[in-house]
Length: 109
Image (cartoon, rainbow, N blue to C red; front, side, top):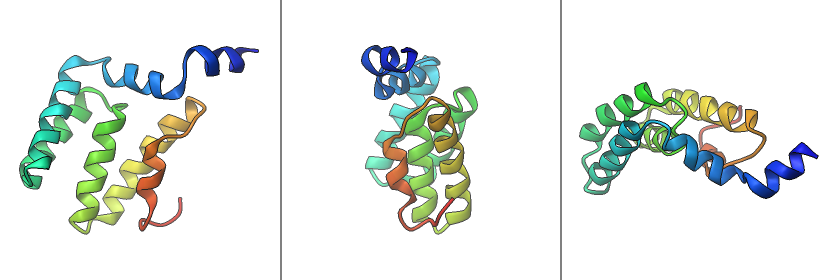
């Protein structure tokens, strides 16, 4: 019964969005890092993402973007660690996320 209520009234995407906004400074840092990333400033993006994660380690978008950049830099091991941590966080909430698709090319857990 609880699972049905959660599925109906608290879909995973909504929970993830709420977790992302728990720490507004972390969410703002994530948004700033997206701007840097979109302009191709990968090196400048990394410290901003790491700062956001230090404030909110559960921020799904931050973890996913950091892993994507690390993969692009050939740091598959580091990217995999970040994605594993993100998937564990998601699986403990009982769902899946777009983070799962980031595993393509990284290997199996």
